Image 1 (cartoon, rainbow, N blue to C red):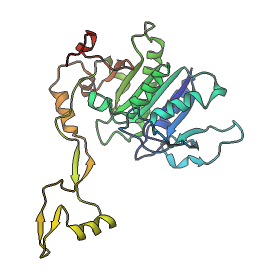
Image 2 (tube, rainbow, N blue to C red):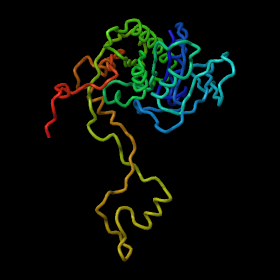
Image 3 (cartoon, rainbow, N blue to C red):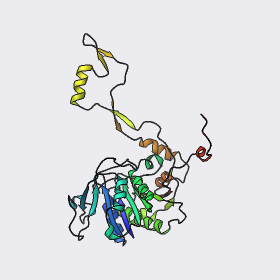
Image 4 (cartoon, one colour):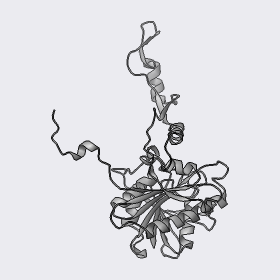
Length: 320
């Protein structure tokens, strides 16, 4: 089949996208036609966003033969004048944009796309708090609302020693390909599934472990996912600080008088991973986080829609 591969981690890179090249090669070795459209840089935690008002510009990436050495690939401003070389599209856009543009604006010479695979994500996308922000799932969701079967594939890091080991990565990719093929062949015909979220643990012997359908754990954050950071040096802000003081106004004698307004602070995204681990530890068996914790692959069927709350089904007038 013709598979469009996208992701939210960008082109091959040992730091941010170490798995996509291996997956593409495994899909090709399994006999599939593969097209690739990726963000030109990491776009994690961005969900199904677009960049409104921005003109998206492509670059053309020609991967090397070394699956685990991204330095062998080359980047080009213009496409190859022939189709004699393998060429991936890199866009300065979001994962969802890559899914759209890959489906509708490139690769027509290969025939219609049968399946969109988003990933493999560098890290798990199990439980709701991860999935709701995931660019990997966002790209698969975009493909689903374009009426294409899609699978979001994520590789869960279990051991810091194993997640860069070539043998572990290759086994996870082989296993991922088998899961992808099985899901495509068994796709429900009643419209009950729009996409799947698959989480494969990066552990030795993953191909011999179970692959289990699982609900998504509906967890929530317990507090802020942002931490306060030191004020970075800024010329304009420094001048304002000298003239006005940091968070109030200067007294007549030059002394500082605390104000009553907002304190000037800066914040950095710092998700509370411990909250997620705790929610999994405290959950009942059978959800996607629990399955991964046992060292097995989780498969979660999803619909590309918002679930309605109970009150929305009554269709009654809202009385004010």
